[in-house]
Amino acid sequence: MKSTVNDRGYLRQGRILSLNRNVFFLGIVSLLTDVSTDMIFTLVPLFLANVLRAPFITIGLIGGLSESIDAVFRFFSGWFSDKVGKRKPLAVLGYSISTVAKPFMYLASSWGMVLAIRFSDRVGKGIRTSPRDALVADSVSARERGKGFGLHRALDTSGSVLGLAVVAIIIYLLQGEGLQLNLKTYQWLVVVGVVPAVLAVLVLLIFVGEKERRPSPIDSVPSGSTLNKLTTGFDTRFKLFLAIMAVFTLGNSSDFFVILRAQNLEAPLIYIVLMLVLFNVTYAVISLPAGMLSDRVGRRWVITLGWLIYALVYLGFALASSLWQVWILFAGYGIYYGIVEGVARAFVADLVTEEKRGTAYGLYHGVVGVTLLPASLLAGWLWQAVSPAAPFYFGAGLAFLAMLGMMALIRE
Image 1 (cartoon, helix red, strand yellow):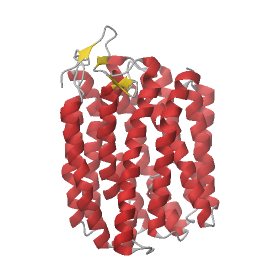
Image 2: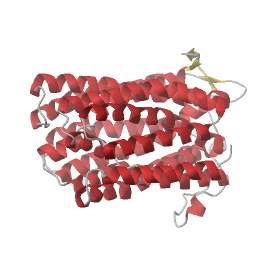
Image 3: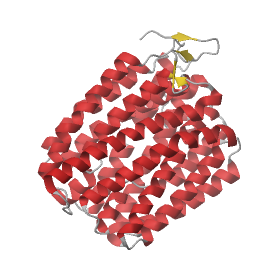
């Protein structure tokens, strides 16, 4: 797609919803991908627990490893996009790998196969995420950055809503209000879910452009032997933000455990899917206003508010005893996501220079991803050894610590 660049270096391709159209079409790509991903992977913890009878610590391993294994790829794809001055080819490669991996879930018959397929899907996500976020940041000015990421997250999450709505219809038609997921239902989710993944790759290829930019003067791949070498040239505030994110994420285990907690409280399968729809609707509705608010009052305050809501929601999951409480908690969880996800990404762009933006997103996603593995293993152990409430008490406590660190150590 042909594009031009204005005198400030931002892509000029016309505007949709009052923002650069590149942001809009990247949002559509994420929307279609999330329709597919939520249909195929959201119920993986229930597939593992109900169909494959995997133990909870194994579910924690798969949830954490699948979330964290892409960390290395996120860093190096972001670094490489800076080095070569190209974002889109890496994004296309990443989305394509995930699309190829998804159909194999139809054949999964052991937790090892699930891990291998999920691993491949997350490699694709790792390759695409940092270059895609850098493409979004490259396409908007600093004064519209929160709005740009907010719109992207809103479209992304709208895909989850659509995907889960289809999941709910398929579950209702095939097994009504049963408590557990069965194999036939899950295989239908895979078959239908592959289609939007293919469409996402086509939209990215045809409609998304990128500006011409010079390769970064970075000479070689960082050795990774020390964090200092990896973060050379970055502001101290950015390094502190990464450290605080690591503290928060250590208590923010895989969302597998939120889904398992709902089933633990005897929610029927169809209710769990509808709770996830509520979660994603709330997430989508909140994302754009939260991004716009951060443009006005500052990212730090908005992120801290989001973490406060997270801590209260996790305390709620620990204490919940009735189904009606779980509905409220899923809505609150969506509010947390809507407030923090886009704003945190915009904050990364605020803290670094444009020529190191891809590397910065790689480091940000890398720190979050690597920390998710021990977080999820610990959550699985706490669930089995202590109680299903224990992982949520632990997560709430670390969220409060992260809030204190953000307010005491980071300045905008």
